[in-house]
Amino acid sequence: MAKEKSEAQIEAEQDLEALDLEIKRVELETAQLNLEEARDRNVRLKHEKADRTRKNEQRQSQLATDRHNRRVLRDKTCSHRQGGSPASPFKGKGDSALNIFNMPDGFTQLVKCVICRGEWWSPHPSDQATAQRPEESAKERDARVAKYKSDLAAFNEIKAKAEDKLTIEAAQPMDCGVTFTTTNTETGAPVLRRRPCDSYAAA
Image (cartoon, rainbow, N blue to C red):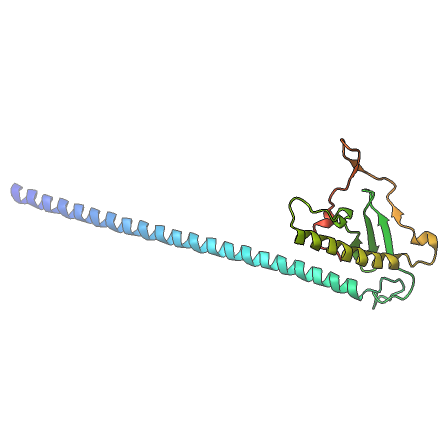
């Protein structure tokens, strides 16, 4: 009887071990499935985040483009003259709404319309130099000089409209009152620094 009980106990222990192994195998499979699911979820979340970032950048770029296009259209349709109505503020026929500002660097002028808020900056004087710069080719130099001449002609045209005021005093440029100049310590020659307006498109 003791021998049969011992065999039964051994058989029960073997069954328990087999059951324990099966439980561990199932737990391992479950853990592997959970890991794969977590990896898939992480990949999906990364893709969704990248997609959201890309769409947001596209929206921001489109908004900037739309804003620029609206500004260009507004600048082109504005008469830059006072006397417009609330319904049609850009169609004034009165005195010039353009003002000229002498900037603190001593060589930059800004023409600004108080109606459409358009801005026109004078081109940088150093861009008219016909000497070839170390980093540019002859073709690039010619393009730079040609662009300077074109920009200067456009600026002078809008500046002439700004000077079309009722009085000589009103046509005078507004001065900030303070001029900051930079000179070369060795030669004493003035240094014309690049301006923020040189790095973005002006009207």
